[in-house]
Length: 351
Ligand SMILES: [Zn+2]
Ligand SMILES: [Zn+2]
Image 1: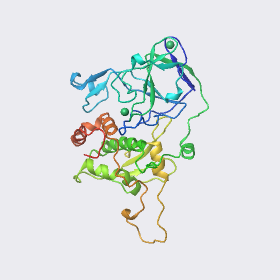
Image 2: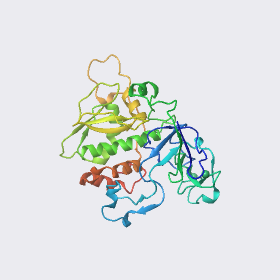
Image 3: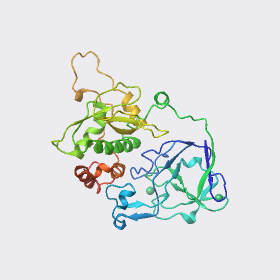
Image 4: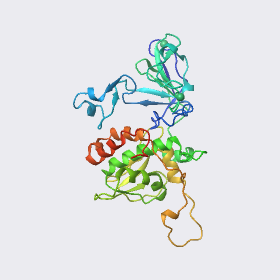
């Protein structure tokens, strides 16, 4: 378990927390209120963003040639963060010894805190130590500033890292739909990131998806993004991961370990396409029931739908953000897909 504290006065700023992988939905924006989204992390956990994040921001037009690529951006953005690397994400309820300082709250948010600048101070010494976010459509979060905080205690805790078999048993995943029939925001984020990796792995060539449940998630958006079948060589996408039989394919839709961020290993030339554990686990194990009493093959269209009836729109902003960090986006066909999407940040619907 890890306890974070103020760098200036060593006041403890968190309860004991265990490290998990930074989820792809950490900075998700979703909908237009009312209120914020659920916290990005479970209680008693933390995640570290290894990349520069938050303010200050630098406009793309002001970057020197080659500078963006050196920072891991391979396609244009409006601006990129020049903030500190190593910001620590927490569920807001796990913060202690710090409070929001109204003098530090900017007024650019809608009805809450949008986290533009650090807005929480250490109650002991007054140093700005964290940024609280709770504006409508944003994930509830507190981000510790790595320049003003540090680790006070770091012991092995009661939450060991689960192996893949234990994960299957203990972390059953998240169904794609919510009780109101809408898609779960975590699925929108997870599928958007996987889609960016899938396109990068395919080079823009057609992707065949024999598994009808996987196809239900990705096929409609892939078709919109890639357009009419090109003359390129078709690549086959298959599920791969713990507890399921091996399937031959070119691209492997694999799980990302939710605690360590480790990817399920695949053997080259198979190319991994990572998907968040909670979505992968559900997709891989919650098979729609097979119709009974049929001895003839059933066309995929006739199989019962696992997924909501709603047209699925993966998170466009996350898709573009992930794609811009993959070097393959420099390939002309992928860059064209990226450029088409930039005006439509929030949804892939209009592609
Ligand atoms: Zn609002
Ligand atoms: Zn302090």
